[in-house]
Image (cartoon, rainbow, N blue to C red; front, side, top):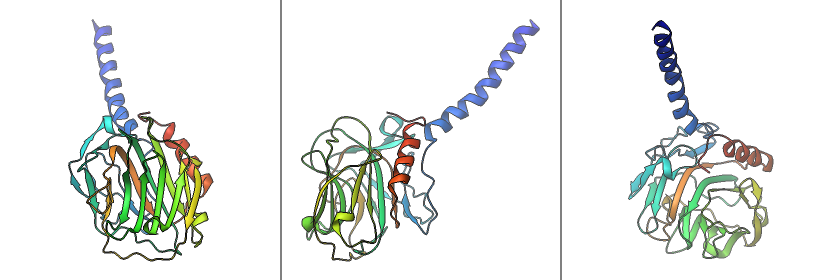
Length: 249
């Protein structure tokens, strides 16, 4: 009898250790940010759109559903393609001679034009945006809408999770803006000229453009915006780390 009691206590003890560990494992690999001066927005989307960057850029949700089935690292957010959006106050303006890096995990539910991240005017095209375009490839628009555009090379509407990380250095050459997909340079072509600085008046949104159209249909997780340019080595290491740590593939 004593042996059975010992076994019961042993099992209970193991469960008390393993259950919190499982919960932790679901979130292990999330980016913790580089400090509020550098990381301007960081969302884990673990049931809400609370900003973890330290800047208090919390989002306002419309028709967003959260859950483990919608996330890459722990929970994520489901976007319905017609009205789902997360809208923010000012996060980061586009300046043609300043650096930034924008990253997001996503999984498309259907092909079509949808904005992953956008601070772009619906009326003038001014701003910056990362889209899944009608060819199911990543498209980045900067300053005057399609006057400065970078295209990706890979079809991303394949039902799999992908990470896109767009990097702009302090260079004013559009050719120096790069699209990294799943840790690798996926830049196919670019055109136009970087010339504009964008005002705070344009809405920053995830899952749509200017809070009114080009709604994304699918799942989104772990978006972040930083005011520095990530190196190719950093991007590769980050993707490899997240890919190999307790994620929903």
